[in-house]
Image (tube, rainbow, N blue to C red):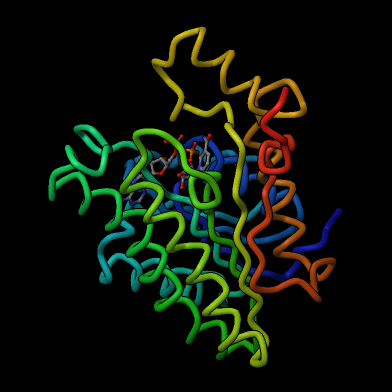
Length: 253
Ligand SMILES: NC(=O)c1ccc[n+]([C@@H]2O[C@H](COP(=O)([O-])OP(=O)(O)OC[C@H]3O[C@@H](n4cnc5c(N)ncnc54)[C@H](O)[C@@H]3O)[C@@H](O)[C@H]2O)c1
């Protein structure tokens, strides 16, 4: 499928995990991709270029407004526009406990600053450039923690719940002007973020899904590509679980 031919995408968190899969999928569907990540590693962009696509890596921090300017300037200056934004970069854990009582200011600021403020800054930087080109599509990443109470994820739940709400609010204002804004709430996806979990934790994560496996980064990338594409031209403001059925699962069995 070449649904994203002629489009220019900015994808954060693109060095590994879900962001990498989204960047590769966008490129495979024809988009030029600006890969942004805190890690100074251009392997994803090189893989796209080696396969005949167009991509560049920018080392950046989603918490820094100036870094976002560099990212969108690269899209417009280097590839001629900005049509797609994937706000994928995120952190799950605070350095310490993420329990509402034990959480400290640094932990709160780390997670809220990256997972919520970073998403705001991304949309703030991208939307004016998308409007210049007549519209676009934004995909944010939420979490099951935005939809359910999950243990030891206080700051993370607040951040991801904020992303879900911000998605619908921004969609309300910009959908009439040609920018669709959606969010994906993944189940547990087998990415480096799970490094260090025990076998029993892994089994519990699998058991939470109706489909008895962990998700793959490519599962989320396929959903993101759909939401980016014109196949989703009537979808906006939505937070879509891609979660092996976790959100729909009843409590008995
Ligand atoms: N893996 C899961 O089970 C799961 C479930 C629900 C939601 N998510 C969300 O999906 C997104 C990606 O998760 P993942 O599993 O691929 O994680 P990951 O840790 O494998 O990848 C995250 C990427 O984001 C980058 N990053 C982190 N902080 C950054 C910053 N300040 N600026 C720029 N880049 C930064 C990292 O360098 C890394 O490349 C996150 O928003 C995460 O909260 C993941």
